[in-house]
Image (cartoon, rainbow, N blue to C red; front, side):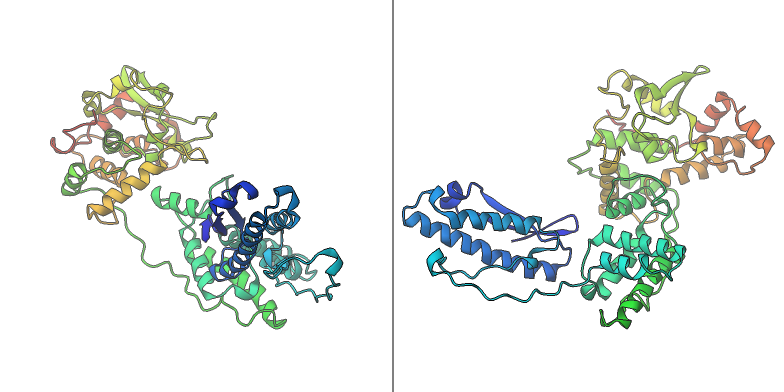
Length: 458
């Protein structure tokens, strides 16, 4: 009966087969306009009673042999259900009649006027009433409080302030800690849960304890006003810790961990095993970020100064670009990738992308499902949390900085798309003068035991 889509509960009830031709629908869906289960249950019970009445009245009409056009109370009941669906203040605003035969007009008595029920104060209304329209609140207070409330509404939907308690405050605090620090700095159609998932998969910096504390304090200040007016019984936004716990320290892969990964059973039905091996091998022999690999196009595989290279560059038509200015660069193709057939791949794939078979999210990001499947496989194989796909960058960086070959730090930074270690005018000038041959020498210093990637991807 209860279903949840996103953060909102819905009422669903199957129409009995014998009544479908009269009601002209197989099932009834009604948004309950709340993300709180207890409130959703109350509203669903009212809808269950109303649909039961609808089914009973329709069955009686059919038993009596009435035609559909001669059953006005059935049509009225259907209209009631649609009004329940469209009512902006929720289904409790529409009184539901008792399940009894409808009186004929000549026998109907004037119903006594019912006193309208006072509607509960919603969080969005509290924001407007006590903050945005408060002449004594500063512009900074209004802006910061509105930002905190909008994040809560985006995550959980609007709700009466009287039912927002410690459980929702804890869930909001935990969600804030998982959101990317860059949230709001660019347009995005992702939900907050999707933003948190993407930040975890891409290992992006998340909101600091200070930022989380500021959001919670704004809500706490609003609740203090509600307490003074006896609109709530307690303030659930106080007494929380804003320490995010010990951060997982990322590191590179060990040889044994790579053996475990590459001999493990790839079980994803959404991404093929060959795609998994191709992406993983490119990451291991280049240090490129997962997003950079997944967004490579066939035209991004070029020969520069006689050296086959990946060209990591913005693609304005899809809205994708490297994370930083330094991320726009060339990365010579490692000889092991060439031996495995990478250059042939450019002429065999269908479509514009070099890596086939990857989904593109509604936000224009390729490889989201791959990232999740990779994390699932890693966890299933018992590999530790401190290693992720991003750990290939750590592995490459560590190898190159410990290589016996004459490899300069600035070449490594350029290969990996890092900002130069020493930011000076001389350094910036020299960066533009690094030759493809020097980058080729750098990338060829990445070495793994021969048996780890022996299977390739074909």
